[in-house]
Length: 256
Image (cartoon, rainbow, N blue to C red):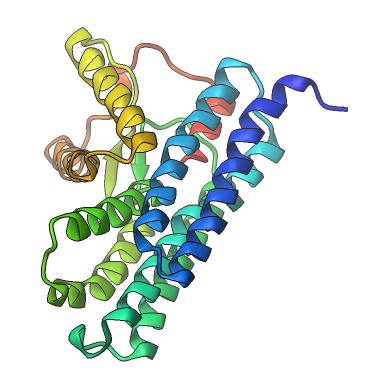
């Protein structure tokens, strides 16, 4: 029987998976707002399971595979379902045929499956992501929808969402580089990072300020990609507080 410490990170993963399934159900029933928040709750849990595994020294091959399966549900199928069912509800306004919406949603989910499978057969050791993480894109889709709904933006804007899914799919399986979020030698950066994490874990459960969550996702993506483009030969690993072991880094990589 495995040690009890493995229960905590895997419990976070299990809850994340259940939230993904619940989000899909909510989308099918037309409760799109709750469906989007459930995806964001999955984002928060996805960070917690990896952190708990490292702190409790409870990383395992089972945890990696279990986490990947949960990620596929929460950040692959659930966002695709949110877009699919929401766009079907707009009818002729969007200008997309049902089969086109289904195809775009399917491409997005398939790309995440490919990405997760690729990372499961590669080792860690880098401080950058190659391709945008599914967690990040799932958060962007969910928070973006919540911002759109909260401010009553025109439904005609939704016609661009299927194209966004296809672009997101390509970015997930691309070699676009993005720095991982880690503590650095800069105390100012660490304080800034910690404050944003705390605020995010307050906004998420309380269902507040989706604008802030969207801004975090966009800023991280744009800023991180620009940093890597401007520093093609420089790895952010040099700024890490400490180098992690291959097993620990592989455990973090599963958060992609």
